Image (cartoon, rainbow over all chains, first blue to last red):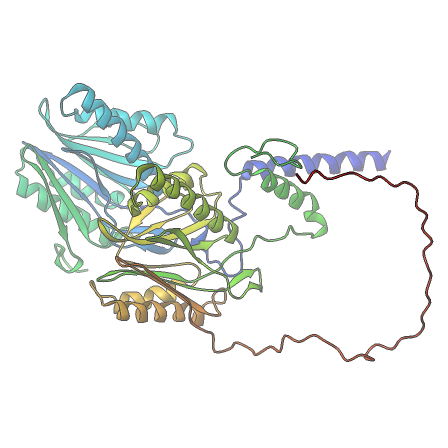
Length: 247
Length: 277
């Protein structure tokens, strides 16, 4: 009796182990080689700070430039402001591969839509395309995206699509791992009716503060101003960042 | 192309049945401390630099299987197109086959369109394929080359993330190699200086990383053509082997000898005329 019971028990444990292995997935196969450090098996994440602000006549978008794989900085001069259309840009945060793939897919869909309409697309359309993809594949993707730009119907707009696939329009939006450190600064310094220059200073200041405190954000600050006239891009190098009081 | 001994038509693309089987086997036999054989990793140092006239790629030549060096003269710089080469780090089989697939695709494209392939196309094809397999293909690839739009260097990770950079290093020895690159890289370097920089970067990787070693390969791609220097520098620890394994007669003592003739009978004889006309 005992022998039979033991056999049954061991068979059950094998089944649970097999189920556990298939549930765990294959991440183990790429890791645990003596010569390969942790970052060769980790996914590349943008662990970032991104931001967008509306002003009358357009939007100002900003991002840091650090892409990390675990503790290693894979690219210290990344461009996280990706053009989707002539007057629509998106800021990417989360998994680098996922956000690049989503941005490519949406660029294609939006381009096709715009050619069909024979008109520049609306920012709301672009944001909804992002939201559809991020929500439908929410289990497989890790992507937090801010879509911003200028269109004729509503002027400058900022929409945010965080992880999970929600969509909402906000006058100012921050995202990424560094955003937690600047909610206070953003909430206290944002005013409606700022000019383009004030928005630029506001964005540069916010991102610099986040880069100061967040280990996964750093490098340079890249900014883009989108308005009816077009897109102006700027880079603020590490030694030119705005300085706040030294602690 | 049907092979006579294949039982079923192979499905296109990669097949991961064996990795499921390996995972189950390992957990099943884990109690008895039996491990599945490890995949051959290139545990490598690869580097690339965009210089004034083109791109210089470099790689070490060691392929490891856990703690044993499996291949001392492994070629890590793979041919993609006449003007595009690709260095691969990660699982050796994955980098080989991925670059082979890419090369075939680009050759077909060239033939169809009559154009030389561009770097950005190669990089996008790689990115789409690797993203589709969600990191299961362990290939970290550095793509470098010169096309009608200029000289470019791209890096594609196993999850499908793409970056375009002027210089970079990859592989297990990349921290050491990147240090050399960050220190001495300048934009628009001369080709000779770029070769020395890449050699020094790979050398740093070889000296500081156990998974990299042996010789250094360099590949210089310019508008005029490709100079694939293999090896650019041989390891100073290379041993001299005689490669002679003949022994003197009499080394092994003969203890005895017996001869048994085999008797054969002719059972059937068939003569078939061959038509030579």
